[in-house]
Image (cartoon, rainbow, N blue to C red):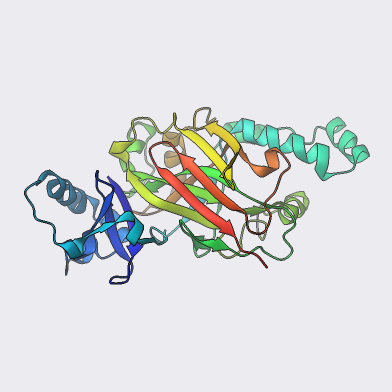
Amino acid sequence: MRLCTFSTAQVKGHVGLGLRDGRVLDVTATFAGDARFACLLALIEHQHDTLPALRALLADRARPYGAHQVYALRSIRFEVPYRPPQIRCFSVYEQHLRNAFGQVMAHGVSPATGLLMRALGAGRVPKAFYETPMYYKGARLNLSGHGSKLARPDPGSKLDYEAELAVVIGRPGKNIDRSVAMSHIFGYVIFNDFSERAQLMKEMRARPSAGPAKGKDFDGSNSLGAWIVTADEIADPHALEVTVRVNGEVRGQGSTAGMTHRIDRIVSYASSNETLHGGELLATGCVPNCAGIEQWRFLEDGDCVDVEIAGLGVLTNSIARH
């Protein structure tokens, strides 16, 4: 199933269910008065009740949907799908790091400094990357959704996109074993981790470094949507083609294949010694070739960025003009 949050001239912030004919069923109106369907986070948290109810609804072909309960896609406005109670941003693609490090060595420092850094071993993927799936905590309030405009942070000379597959936790758990980790996933969503590279490089070069801060944290920097697709719809999340377009031009193509740490490992590690709750978001990291830094090509004011992941749809954002 494909789920979203949408608004129209008549309703605001309702849960929507994508139908095969291209329309959207108003789930909140269909189950009016039932708090489990009032918002997408509640639906996720009560998945053992809500998902069977939605499947039964779809199977009942005789049900006469009222005109007020079904909308054409062109008549709705997609909102941020939901507000995750926690965001963890992982980095599990070795090739993305190699691509980015190479560009920083070539363009982000002086030639002499680049030579010295290479001689000292800087720019190599650290050994710790291969040992455990590393992550930082994303700012869960800095959200944007499909169709949103982002204001460039100040200063923001190197504003960038990162196309990522994100995992939405459904069933809670603690110290989850890898053998059952995938059963804790509610679904998947496209995630664009907007980043300001000039600020980020300063923060990551600082010693000691606490990791990303203002290079990642600004209004709207965590974009997700338009759809959350339930896990049963995705046969293999490790084999999804990813495409990034800027103003219609293909800027990057990659695949979710090649994760050093696969999703079962990510879920298991995130749950170590703490409970994962329904709705928590685990972003898996930038897919190789799907960030501007890998080409040393950044976003301009007015640019429109599309991130497409096979089976999940397209997430579109634009950079506001000053």
